[in-house]
Length: 611
Image (cartoon, rainbow, N blue to C red; front, top):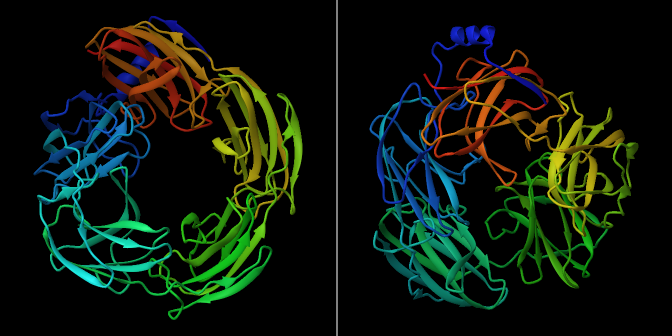
């Protein structure tokens, strides 16, 4: 990072004046508390996201406790309301929860969310279709802890007539439900049919554990039953089970009929040996899985600690694999790890005994398939790797494979907390992929990169180590069919550069380079600290002829950056301007960065009080 401060930059100011017409002013989150109701307005000048699916939004900041049951309700007669919840500082990825029409009255939204941990969360109020504007109301409330009703009794071969009402018990998602208990032995198969002319039924089955319902299976639209629910269930152990009857929408009312029957016989398991490959065909006459889809079942004998790989390949359908123990307890599933529409599942057997493999399509699919069961050796010890070293490798048949069947070479190194390491992998034979994880019996990925060099199919992974210790770097192809020669460069980038400082009313000129600090997504940035008073209104302007500029303001808490606001294109297509109000007295951080990874070059950053 190189930067300097000076009092004025006349050329930059002139450029900003010319570009400022029609800009969008960024906004910060508004504090809100449980029990409050606000009246808001989405307007042309509000914050909007970027891209083809851009939308305007207002953010509200709320403090929640772990387990606190939040309900947010948004109503508007001007647009189709949509609500989302994010953890503060993490609003650029997938939301933790969302809702479109949960209020059950046209286009209003009602979102229910229970956080797993204490913290600050962002409730985002927006239109469903993006750039619509208009007035809305947003109300936050806390839902009471759901009561678990005493379940009624139902026996196999019996039925029960019931009615869902608004006064019934609610589950964790706010769905009203009735409950029925029955007993089953280990391996017993039952069929549950839930029918209603008043609502779209949803049936769930599970057990009560420490006073809480733990779901084992559910079904919405059973095969051949229209909107009615039909679920075949195999009891994994003897005991009492609970059926919950509810609706897909969760708040529907009406009559229903619940029938509990002896389930159809399980598919007869064919024998398959470790090391064997078999061919099969699914058709309409094939045995049915518990989900009602055509399926074939295979049985094999394994030993404790044995690592097996199961591959299912088909040209006619999307393959799906499930592994069970002898009592039909599900152990693992896979859909697409075998590449394209094929499935591959790698698993370490927990004990000596028999196991079951279910081979089927992802949906009610039919067609020919090939199933292979093999024993795979545990990964070989990794090769020692030193900083500054460049190695040449060759991934070829017979080498170590990961759980998705991809060849890989493993490299071991030792690092310190806060140390930044960088690996660059190049190959003319395959699309390169890099992974880094902690050393241990099982590899657990901490970070990965596919195309970080932005030069075709080569990879560059930059990672700041979270603690002192031993780590593993894996070099592998992106797909399971990849193999061939590669080169790997490994370097120590040292500790992450600390921020500079910037006074309000001053301007900094800098340059982003590959030696700068990087986000987890590989985006380079320069950081500056500044002081602000509570309610002080500041404007941050970032322009660059070299990259698509993004300006971001946040707080640094013990080395952990927490974003408060950011802007990408409010000044123009590639320049940023953020109007921001300080929430409290303190020291803050402004980041000058690019929108995309591997983008570098000169920039100008100005910090001033809003006019």
